[in-house]
Image (cartoon, rainbow, N blue to C red; front, side, top):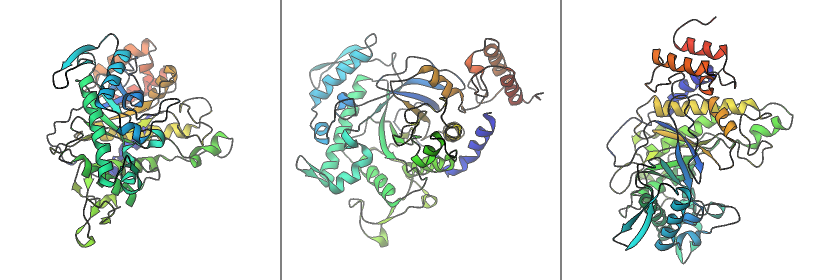
Length: 448
């Protein structure tokens, strides 16, 4: 049954510790309270309308478009990424738009550059595009900016000069993405990778403080970025699963640890201070100076990541409904596939419920959506089955008004009589009397 999992996940909302304590105006574009399916490379063609609001108009791009993804048989270096010119980026985006949206794109003219360009009008696409900027071994990944500041020299650049060049290239990619998809919301993938032990660390807070510094630079590189998309993938560590799928003792639930990972990541991107100076000495321009404040409970000041104009970036964390861990014998499998330990599925249900509490049960001024990342090698039946096992914004709220009432009962009944998957209230893969029982209980009626 999904109900106990959902109830437990809502009780975990106290972990958020006021991440949405304050709302204010921002020019950043918003998806609104939303759950997304974000496919790699192209939007999912199928509408997966189920419980509450689930949108499929979201996708990730990187690869040859930015010379920064991880496509097959290509290993982009940091030098490849930094030397991609405006003309090369523009041509790559034109090719991408024409190939992925052949029936929707139009041609515009940029008077500043004197170039014609392809674009998809807002009427054809107004969803989320997440810039998947990685490169070989994640060399261009935002989570690695502090390491590049400390250790990397490329094209004669190092330290702040190198990091500024990387940030400027992020901005150039965002500008061309905005031109190609003027009605879209643009996210930046992997600004931080959450720690799977659910704790904070000195390294994590220094990375985020450094990114906050660069995002607010007067050169306003990220002016066209609306969302920061931290990675909170349900990747699962070897200790979580290898015993179970090799026939040993069933794995333990790791939901509390993953809830901690999400909570710490969201708090770090919205609150502070992460670094104390004063008696500790140093300055933000020396990211290894000062005292790292690793206790999230002490981040009491509202400090979201802001751009040069003071506008805060919204946050859209990324989950996954597949297992991605090469050390696991369940690697690259959906959580609902036969043989995958059900504890993993239960864990993701708790995590998803917690994300729902952030997005739908609190004031969604910063975290107003989250996304399940999927690759292009998908089995739609397994995808749909996976989604029906997870808690949605309000279970049984088919008309999206935030409560379960008479109209929801009518909609449910129409699905139930048709044996539509949307009436599978307990996520067991069949539509039967147990699903009617769940709906009756949600309506306050006794169930025999």
